[in-house]
Image (tube, rainbow, N blue to C red; front, top):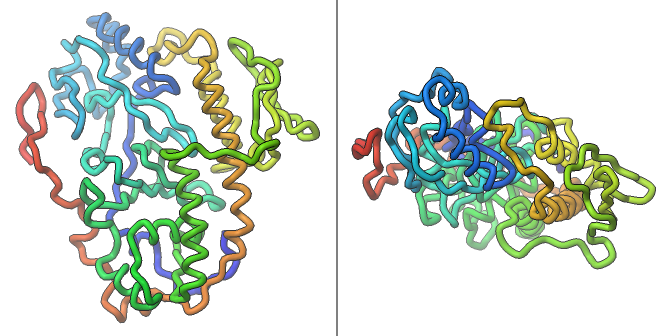
Length: 385
């Protein structure tokens, strides 16, 4: 993390005041690393009945086959009780299931213990979710364009309304920074700066120095691009790009790393070059590559819906693995630049309080009223919000 700091830095919770607890699934089978498995799981679920359907569902205190809930905002799923649900699987959506692990989710409110509809209402192509990565002091904040399912840290959307409107920033913050820097400051600039500078204690050192600000924002934009992965695909320079050197087996069991050869070994399959920085990249004390592989290969509990998974290694997983290696290596390369960032002419929490920017008003800590259309409630009734 940045090595030059000051004691009176404002906290992330004050700069981005509206936060939402991450969604809580309550059961694992509605998520998977591949979408076809989810369709197959849903089909198996709706074909079962009685006690078998209930056992497959894995009921909890929040969700049973008889629980009545409405549709998730923006989704067109059924609202009848799951006890009698049928029909095709709702189209799976892409989510961030763990740090740097993009998976799929059946977006059905009836399957999710705590879906956080307020997040779904503001999720669109303009939105960026900042996710506190509470278990990782080396990477205390993540950013994603996908709905994040990470726990336990809170989620802070960049915008409080769809369409990239009403930034989730303390009112007056961008104007105050613009006055100090001598040029306009946009909400994505604040998020980029925050990604590059946030400390493990969630303090965000701010600066009024235009040169330092530009350097930090440029670094944060690159971090944001690498974490979101929703534009041009990142690539390592020629000669450093990882390739499949020996075909991956149909069902790999083990993952290992040859540091001398810079080679990732999936049984007899070989991927290289894999920089040591990518292999050593950890989040929450766990190697990201090992965790990603384990989720896709660990033996599931027999007889559960989670046990429905690909019979062999899908080709898209190989492409995803190559891209993940690239992303981790490129982020690791940015860490020395983060360490060198300095914060001359600091904009302190005390200064922001004296300017009336902090503390943010209570209304800024609550979700905005964004409902501009009717949402379907339980059993086809319109929700009253």
